[in-house]
Length: 269
Ligand code: KIV
Image (cartoon, rainbow, N blue to C red; front, side):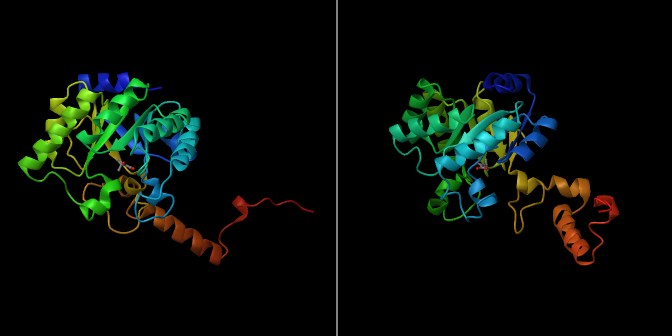
């Protein structure tokens, strides 16, 4: 099983590592066979699995449930789990909720925010919980940002983000996720912290790792996607492969071409 130390080693060796979101056992098994390096049980499951229009309704129990399912099916990848909205607003909550997802199989928790969370990071780390800090576009604060938009667009804002990273690194943060920031800032954060793996999503290709929401990169998300999403499924199987497969199934049921003899138990009774 890949450990946090392995990810640090990958960074030091300049070996880029892959990360995908994952919420269930069958996809976790596919990722094991594909040797994906790390898995994020993201609170994006509030949208991809639960159908909400933001991550805000997700609970700690949801996160623990999906973490257990993924961990059972994948013994290869490094697993981190999001602590959801308002579940780490106080230190006792952060400790109790981190315990729940770590006991479900996570190797690290991810929380969203900047320097103001330094004390939380220090406390979790002291209690044996490695912490990944998510900065840039932090979806749990969507109502503060007023939408999902590029962050840290000015030198001043980029320097503020670097200062936040420094305070969090000093408190013991063991990983950073940077979402939707200029590529130059992704590179600067990765270079400023030589011992801390930095994962990007819409942060350019010079971070140490990359993460995507698995439904997005498989073309399973209907509607408009962010600029940073690449549909890898379309490149393998043609555009809208999943949608076309489901359409073909629907048509085959209607015209009775499915199930044909090949898919049928023919027993004389
Ligand atoms: O919840 C999630 O899927 C995430 C990624 C977008 C990084 O936090």
